[in-house]
Length: 326
Ligand code: COA
Image 1: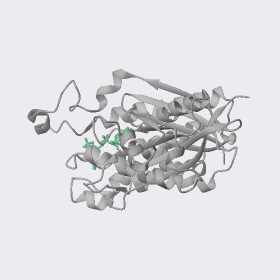
Image 2: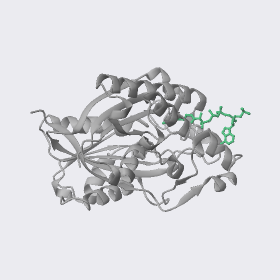
Image 3: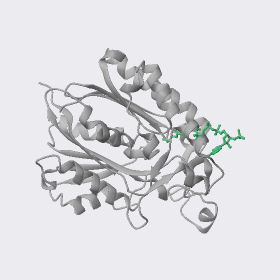
Image 4: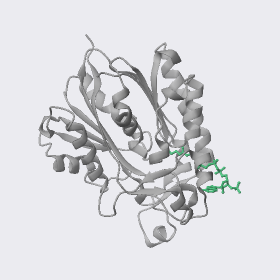
């Protein structure tokens, strides 16, 4: 018998504060119609200034645990994927473990930009498949509002704050079946935070140049994202002999509705098989996929074939095929 890792619980959290397209019209030279037409986004959530990414991760985990018979002490490992950690170090995973009382857990952060949650999910699944752990929490959380320049209309319309979490446990049926991942570092310059790392440490100059905010060449990223996400999803379908009829849901990273539509079209999937909540939350980076699972949880049935797909900065992209377990 092969031991697989199955998602056995899901939790989510989005801040209460809503930032609408109409409100953005007052901040930058944009308009509601343009944002809807070009991205599919209608509003996004913004976390209070005095709260951090770990606070959202904690909320998502508490929501998840409330649906199980487990307590934080039962958790073996917490992996947090984020591009907006509370600090450069210590890891946000450690802060979350402390806040929820996961005294028997270890943890670490991962960063694969917008694909981070899928990379973390696949990493977490290895600890289950190897037999090393029985309960792994994978958290995708981002306070993107700290990464966004609200004077830059190219990026400020796109992003929002949120967190999602899944619990991985061993199973002998269903669970994570297959995956494929790719990186192309030559694409790094098209989507990045230029300063604040070891190459361009924070200085008065970098602050003046606003280099601590997201820089994106949207058109180029769009082109690569459409191809990357569609290609890799198709490859995972092919290597598992899946047709569109076999697939219950595609769970795409929510960066742009047009990228989602292109991926769904290539996979031959109708709208009702594609999870989309970008209109409400925008791009929450590491939280998009678990927030979709959180919202669709009640509709999912054991054995459903689910395809997860993401593309993001790096470039880094990937797709996971799993059978829903509960
Ligand atoms: N409001 C109104 N007009 C805007 C605008 C805004 N917020 N932002 C850009 N524009 C303008 C541009 O200046 C441009 O005007 P011009 O033709 O006079 O130069 C025009 O709209 C078209 O700009 P363009 O950048 O070609 O738009 P687009 O259709 O590519 O949409 C993005 C822009 C950012 C929405 C889109 O490129 C995108 O989603 N890119 C990928 C994002 C992504 O997946 N990122 C990955 C993160 S994981």
